Amino acid sequence: MKYQTQKIAQLYFTVALALFAIQVLGGLLAGWIYVAPNTLSEILPFNIVRMLHTNSLIVWLILGFMGAAYFLLPEEAEREIHSPMLAYVQLAILVFGTLGVVVTYVFNLFEGNWLLGKEGREFLEQPLWVKIGIVVAALIFLYNVTMTVLQGRKTAITNVLLLGLWGLALLFLFAFYNPENLGLDKMYWWYVVHLWVEGVWELIMASILAYLMLKLTGVDREIVEKWLYVIVATALFSGILGTGHHYYWIGTPGYWQWIGSIFSSLEVIPFFGMMAFAFVMVWKGRRDHPNKAALLWSLGCATLAFFGAGVWGFLHTLHGVNYYTHGTQITAAHGHLAFFGAYVALNLAIFTYAFPILKNRDPYNQVLNMASFWLMAGGMCFMTFVLTFAGTVQTHLQRVMGEGFMDTQDQIEIFYLMRFGAGLAVVIGALVFIYAIFVPRREVISTDATVPAE
Image 1: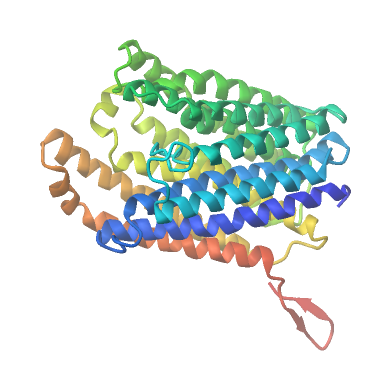
Image 2: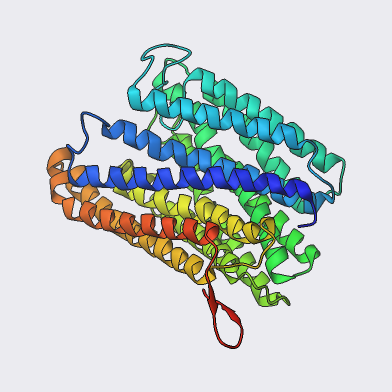
């Protein structure tokens, strides 16, 4: 490890993985509640389980992005992180806020309190004091990484990463605007949720993926940077006005049906570009990197993001289709594979690449790590197929034939059972990944030499 402040990333990655474990276990519990609705209904109601599942997902992904920034910026900027102390203070604020959120949700504390109670907006349920803490932590982070880049070398990777990180922080400010009008609320709510995951997060994804391709394949930086700028341009061009696909049925003017449909259709392009970019880089690459697991996660990330965010997003993004499918299990199918492919797999790729360097050792437990990829990816793909079928049946019975919601749910219960099985595979894969990352392999002593066992 060339730069000592890269060590900061290790703590961020560790906290992120702990929250990842909580997130997938919460998802498994939520999946079981679909099968047996009264499970823990008095102690831990479904709405609380779902909040923990979605909020822990967002927090651990952002912690992963921040850790990735602290890991790759010293190498790209060719200097140490501006202030390691500020990085640890920032992490402490985020961890304290996360614990505060969990306690508030689980015990339903301060109900109705404007400062301390949860706000009841999906993904943005955090109490106001936690939102303020997030902004403080984000300002510390932005100051730290921006000063690091300004005082060092500037590259396409650092430029795009900074643009994405600044966008992430600035767009979160819309979380503080909570108008009484529900249509207006939803319009600005998507400024956070959509413009994050289909806007600035794509820039973060592209820059981290570009860094990994640079390191794992040995392709010239010039080629990587050209691809990166093309992907970023298409992501912003399609993603910003693509927000319109959320405006179809919330009371906004009818022209959003056309704008949303057209630009949402174009959102497939940057994800296809990222997949093509990853495979072309490996094909052109001259380096036989020892960390095969990191390469598998990188290619898996680009591929699953294309299918989850691109193809499955396109399946129900046209307003004529969305009129029937909106809010069905087809939405859940798209959301699960898109998040896993684009962002979960990305974080696990950078963790897999970085941990051997941070611990100053060769990559170990690679077979286990790669097995965890196939378990998680396979489980998530099966879950997506199952939910797609469930959503298709639900759309026909409920939206076309006019059957009641609960009658329809009874008829798609078999799909929920299969979804739970797929979720179990994902959880096992996640636990195997954490084991493979943290637990050193045993050394097998032979008569001739010491042979490392996978």
